[in-house]
Image 1: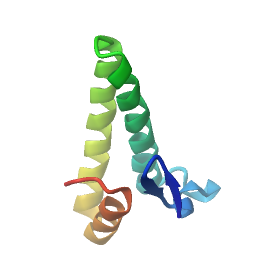
Image 2: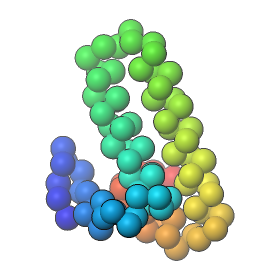
Image 3: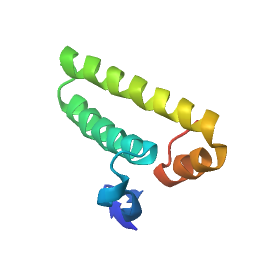
Length: 86
């Protein structure tokens, strides 16, 4: 595992064959969320970035809901790896 900005990032998710998996998509959205959140700390009035952040958060929430419904074990593992609260 690597640490990036105080967060643990598992490298197994970054393999080429996993790009379409729900886990990789959630991982990708989480990275985008952190990037946009750090941008918004500097630019508090950037309304377009705030809108984009809300859209990405909603997409990630829908993917997590789907994963929780289909496979609860994979969902719990992903939540704990990415340190996302439920």
